[in-house]
Image 1 (cartoon, rainbow, N blue to C red):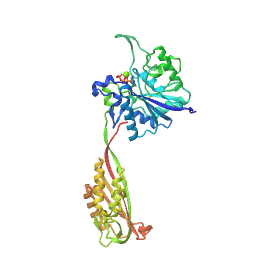
Image 2 (image 1 turned 90 degrees about the horizontal axis):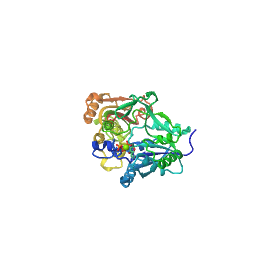
Image 3 (image 1 turned 45 degrees about the vertical axis):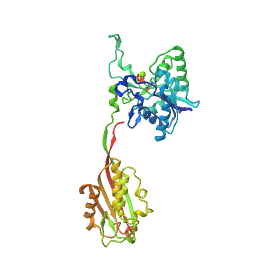
Image 4 (image 1 turned 180 degrees about the horizontal axis):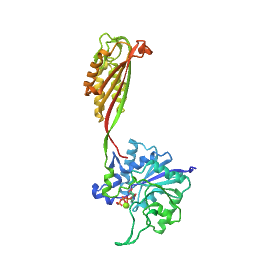
Length: 400
Ligand code: CTP
Ligand code: MG
């Protein structure tokens, strides 16, 4: 069964991060930069991946509110959430910030998930499981993990008890509720002067039954200086592959060149540049390593300056774009497909030249030639085609 109203999330970012402040030059922890964006934005992007979530309310310190309205708009324009959002001021205590956030939810909202922006690692799948429990009619759903330490109650430094560990859970956020219930809880709390550290506590105090679902060990709250290690980015080299394909028609035009090597006696090709089909496939494969489009985009054949231009320049240009993207090319595998001419005599020469242009050892470049058994346009000697696969590596984040 799925609930009829909309699900929204309240992202709490109105704290002052006092326990961490001294280690981060006084920056409020929700604004710390991680993977190129402020910490609070990571939770926003996680929620935006869940189709059931229709909107977000961001809660920021009142003193930052104008600045943060602009910042959220700016972040959303460079990396759109695809969601409605509001930006509101928080209060002195966490629960005051929650209450302010709840007040701004629209009439169409039936359920709300309340999340600490200081927990940037919460996964979309865990959030979806909270939504599933709410769909089944729960009055409150809290992600929880078993505790591994033995917990003691103390009075001063004297132990007063050892609760049974199997009954204990450490709870996390987001915590999900039907909106009418959590609003009512906050209204009562306001009147009664309750002081709580999480949202579920209020429903428990009202006698409502709140359930736990499986939380995540990784869903920690960045709280103390030692937690900053969790935000350190570990990078490793990951592979990337680009593929290119090109065709040229035989006909009166340019003398045949393949991989920068003239092929004397080969049919002429019709082309705008020097018609080097192998270099064109190679350049497209290099651009494919990093989402660089194709050579038509960078070297349009309407450009008079490219008339009869050596395709080696196109390959060099593609290589420098790949390098600027931080890619190191490690291998190229090239195949020419043609019925005529016979290419075996030129294969090694092409291989050596391509390796030298690409700055690769010859062992990292492979050149193959094949016919299509007299089939198709190459078989009918109407043209020539080439395919290229280029492999590279680039540095990327490896953590969640
Ligand atoms: N929070 C909030 N409004 C408050 C207090 C806290 O929105 N008045 C938010 C924080 O921004 C954080 C979450 O509630 O995302 C959990 O609180 P906590 O970890 O205690 O953060 P801070 O209160 O900012 O940190 P500290 O207690 O160290 O000052
Ligand atoms: Mg706090």
